[in-house]
Image (cartoon, rainbow, N blue to C red; front, side):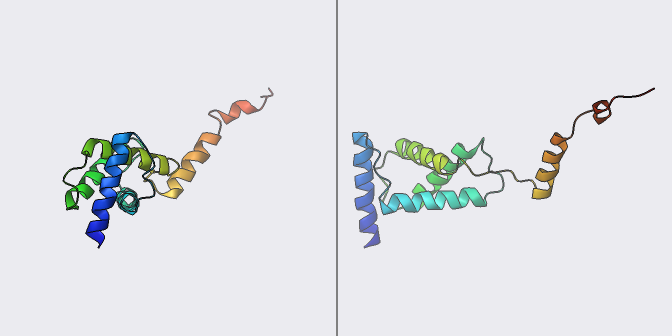
Length: 124
């Protein structure tokens, strides 16, 4: 039953895309794809906010490659829609790969004035 349901969901997704609608977030197939791509992005240690969109497109392309029900889908429209959704859901995630102690030390360094000796009046 799952392959048939996926075919129906994909057909409905394609019709939504062709009509210009964006109400495909309720489709189980779409949710599964978003979940798989997000899990791969979060486990990838080379993901940054700069390459997030391209990596989301690459992982979605891999997802399409393993699905047997996707021979007729518009891949570019699908990849763009998915990349937009993933960027929106992961916009608040920090992809900084440095250890937390290093990040805290960097923040502490920026709070120190450059020349603290000029903070006080020198008496002669």
